[in-house]
Length: 441
Image (cartoon, rainbow, N blue to C red; front, side, top):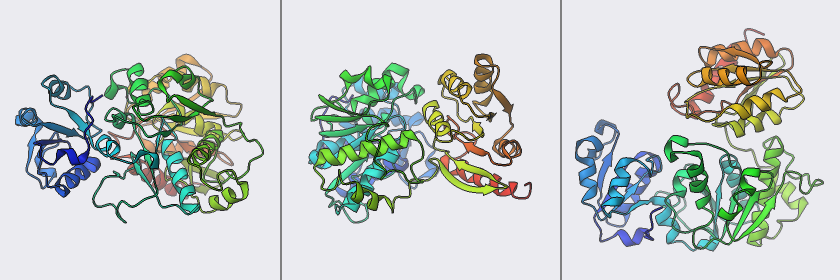
């Protein structure tokens, strides 16, 4: 952690280094310029990509940052990289944009939402319900909207800020919102954090910094319950089996028991905020009529020859893929997995597939596909496997197998980088492959 409690306004008379651009980095740059600060800009990316006066990291960038009073880094740059460690050892505070914003905020109007998976859905759902009940809210943070960006549409006059916090951003925080939500915990982002236990500690640190009061947490997770000491002083445990008679969250945009729990976590946050209508089933039902969910999160994109195609491209680990499979209990599923290999353990995926009652074909794609296939075949030899050269061939093979009434599910349990630009690019490739299947049925 940074150990320094700066706000954006504290930087006005300091020599500031900006390390990294991208979505949050360019917002950091706009924010600094809005308060009259022209930073030293350093990036790992070749200079030609940006129309800025930047210094490459490998060509004097680190030395330039060492001469600064403070450095603001983007979340994608690991806090454990040698360059960051070197800066800290030289006494240069390394900060993050979200941490600077949080330290200066009226935090009782902020709800932080974190978790290995489910945080985007829960944050978007909470923001939707707040808006439906008449409050002006902004869903921001890791979901792609830096809450301090001077270019925010509509300015910064909100009743509530719902902030999705990634494990990367959590290491930048020196304070917590009084109310926060925790949706799930599972190994992820291990290269960035340097190990699974450090990942857990970094992720949960967002919930227990000064100012933390209550964590609304996933009570179905043994991993979370075993680490309850790392949460806020008070914890409200939520299970997908709570409120069994409640029907307001039974909408197409929230398939599966895990999404039922995410919806209940959002409702408990509303209750903790004292929002009128939070416990009114009819009001919640009316509000959910206009909730359509987020793209590439268990999104049905079409049906061809009786086969349903489901885009879950944002699934980047085993936990979310298992949840996706659970959402289609009772259906035969052709599951497409594989992508950027981050070294996570795929044994739990093997166990989950083996225990399914319905036929399941696992189609593996590069780069991690072969390793996943090895784990699945060695752990549970009865699992149906097909190693595919690419996503297109996996979709075609899955479509042929799933006929006449099955599901082709893209839930890769891995990031998209390497084969695709991002999850959106992977989702579009999946959709195009589905369209190509229309001539095969």
